[in-house]
Length: 296
Image 1: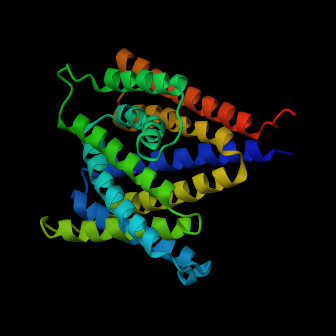
Image 2: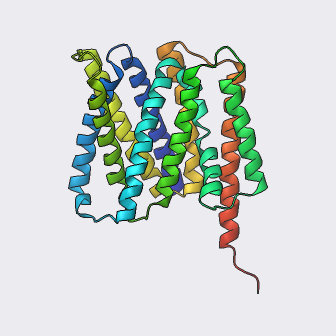
């Protein structure tokens, strides 16, 4: 019989595999459909699935406070912009490299929480954040010839997703997660529709339609699985399993795109993941100390 933490870890690993498979299919779609039309079709499919889930669970009947509505709107804008920058980088960057850079998100969110939300971050975690950013520099290598506009897009994406997550932290717990996800999907669909006006319309071929269905299915699956993971196991236990997405990115990059990161990129990825794991460890230590009984 698996414990709740073990089930949560398995759900998180499955969720990260699902997200990475979705990204791989989007990368394959780059040669099949224009970007905005891809966003339109995927946004439509995801919106329909999430809309059905929201309706079946009665989420539409839940009132959302005005302040939370503004936070949802700002979060949606940040997430939509992040989607565009991420896909631009994904189309022109090895998937493992990009995934490794994105593993810095727990570090940037921790730093953002300290700077903007007044969350306490000790010197150990600040040191870990600094080492993690060094890992990002090893992957991106600003001084190298390989550093281009798409590496900049990946870094901009990290900034936008960090802002998104900080806005999420400001929301009250009464805001349904499914409603937030539906707002994001609908916004991406509208963004894709607007951008499609600048592109020549391409009717999806059967192969492209299959990829669109796959990326839509996997992105919804990733969302459901990761949310289920953090609701099943302890947050501090299951969250580090997000890093298994890098393993999937390495495998898919090699199998589908004949990509394999060089030694410096692998070292940078190890630094990012290692410091992220240390950050989660320090978070658990802090939580345990907060729960410890006060000696009389």
